[in-house]
Image (cartoon, rainbow, N blue to C red; front, side):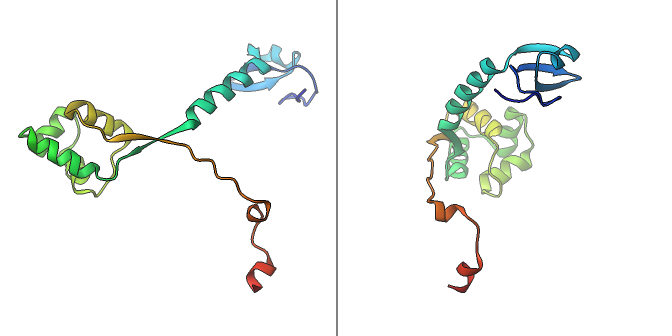
Length: 145
């Protein structure tokens, strides 16, 4: 069993909303707010959601600027026309096409949808295992070596 966030008592915990904060509270402290549910139920839901989200990471492809520029030119659009269609500033489109900025995932999705191209790719999350010696900090002996 865990301890209550408010009083520290070891007992069954409930997820409660108390004064616009969500806390783990025992039954007696939960009366100060609204009980959302039992803590064990929410822990299992949070773990499953996290494990699904952590499996893949979305990134923008390396040559995003060339892909966007070529597709825009293929459709005979100027940068200002594309910016108007996407409801973005022309300067943003110019900087994205020149490679000065990397588009956010939201902007990349808008461009993908409008131009019918693929800019975002999923990469499986690679877990790196460290040896115990690698996890500790730098020591004086490390500096002398």
